[in-house]
Image 1 (cartoon, rainbow, N blue to C red):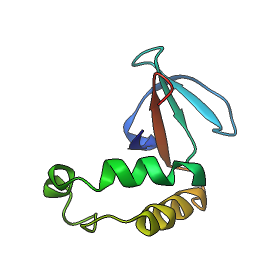
Image 2: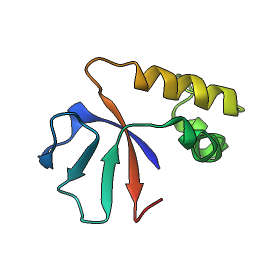
Image 3: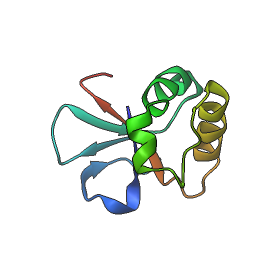
Image 4: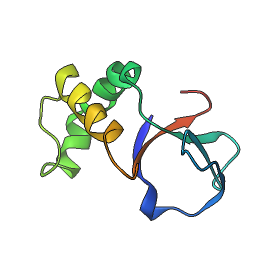
Length: 91
Protein backbone atom coordinates (compact mmCIF):
# COMPACT_ATOMS: atom_id res chain seq x y z
CA UNK A 1 0.00 0.00 0.00
CA UNK A 2 1.23 3.46 -0.90
CA UNK A 3 -0.32 6.83 -0.11
CA UNK A 4 -1.30 8.82 -3.17
CA UNK A 5 -2.98 12.14 -3.75
CA UNK A 6 -5.66 11.95 -6.47
CA UNK A 7 -4.89 15.36 -7.97
CA UNK A 8 -1.49 14.18 -9.22
CA UNK A 9 -2.76 11.34 -11.44
CA UNK A 10 -4.73 10.88 -14.61
CA UNK A 11 -7.23 8.04 -14.53
CA UNK A 12 -8.64 6.06 -17.37
CA UNK A 13 -11.64 4.72 -15.44
CA UNK A 14 -13.24 5.42 -12.10
CA UNK A 15 -16.64 5.30 -10.52
CA UNK A 16 -18.24 8.43 -9.17
CA UNK A 17 -18.13 7.46 -5.49
CA UNK A 18 -14.36 6.87 -5.63
CA UNK A 19 -14.70 3.49 -3.94
CA UNK A 20 -12.19 2.09 -6.40
CA UNK A 21 -10.17 3.87 -9.02
CA UNK A 22 -8.35 1.98 -11.71
CA UNK A 23 -5.20 3.77 -12.73
CA UNK A 24 -3.85 3.74 -16.25
CA UNK A 25 -0.43 2.67 -14.89
CA UNK A 26 -1.12 -1.06 -14.80
CA UNK A 27 -3.87 -3.61 -14.45
CA UNK A 28 -2.14 -4.71 -11.23
CA UNK A 29 -2.64 -1.36 -9.48
CA UNK A 30 -5.85 -0.37 -7.72
CA UNK A 31 -6.47 2.96 -5.99
CA UNK A 32 -9.02 2.80 -3.22
CA UNK A 33 -10.19 4.57 -0.10
CA UNK A 34 -8.28 3.89 3.08
CA UNK A 35 -9.87 1.55 5.59
CA UNK A 36 -9.07 1.25 9.29
CA UNK A 37 -7.90 -2.29 8.53
CA UNK A 38 -4.99 -0.69 6.61
CA UNK A 39 -3.48 0.58 9.88
CA UNK A 40 -0.95 -2.23 10.38
CA UNK A 41 0.34 -2.15 6.80
CA UNK A 42 0.58 1.65 6.87
CA UNK A 43 2.46 1.43 10.17
CA UNK A 44 4.83 -1.16 8.70
CA UNK A 45 5.56 0.95 5.61
CA UNK A 46 5.70 4.34 7.33
CA UNK A 47 7.85 3.26 10.28
CA UNK A 48 10.92 3.11 8.07
CA UNK A 49 13.80 5.51 8.62
CA UNK A 50 14.60 5.57 4.90
CA UNK A 51 11.07 6.81 4.21
CA UNK A 52 11.22 9.28 7.07
CA UNK A 53 14.52 10.73 5.77
CA UNK A 54 12.60 11.91 2.69
CA UNK A 55 9.43 13.14 4.40
CA UNK A 56 10.66 14.51 7.74
CA UNK A 57 8.33 17.48 7.56
CA UNK A 58 5.28 15.23 7.20
CA UNK A 59 5.90 12.06 9.19
CA UNK A 60 6.77 11.47 12.82
CA UNK A 61 9.50 8.96 13.57
CA UNK A 62 9.04 6.46 14.96
CA UNK A 63 5.68 6.10 13.25
CA UNK A 64 3.14 4.30 15.43
CA UNK A 65 -0.07 2.40 14.83
CA UNK A 66 -1.86 5.35 16.48
CA UNK A 67 -0.28 7.69 13.89
CA UNK A 68 -1.59 5.39 11.16
CA UNK A 69 -5.10 5.39 12.64
CA UNK A 70 -5.12 9.18 12.88
CA UNK A 71 -3.92 9.55 9.29
CA UNK A 72 -6.50 7.07 7.99
CA UNK A 73 -9.27 8.87 9.88
CA UNK A 74 -8.09 12.16 8.36
CA UNK A 75 -8.18 10.63 4.87
CA UNK A 76 -11.62 9.10 5.39
CA UNK A 77 -13.00 12.48 6.47
CA UNK A 78 -11.76 14.36 3.38
CA UNK A 79 -14.43 15.98 1.25
CA UNK A 80 -13.83 15.56 -1.60
CA UNK A 81 -11.81 12.42 -1.06
CA UNK A 82 -8.26 13.14 -2.29
CA UNK A 83 -5.82 10.70 -0.66
CA UNK A 84 -5.98 7.07 -1.66
CA UNK A 85 -4.32 3.80 -0.78
CA UNK A 86 -2.61 1.96 -3.62
CA UNK A 87 -2.93 -1.79 -3.85
CA UNK A 88 -0.35 -3.53 -6.00
CA UNK A 89 -1.24 -7.08 -6.87
CA UNK A 90 -3.65 -7.28 -3.95
CA UNK A 91 -1.30 -5.86 -1.31
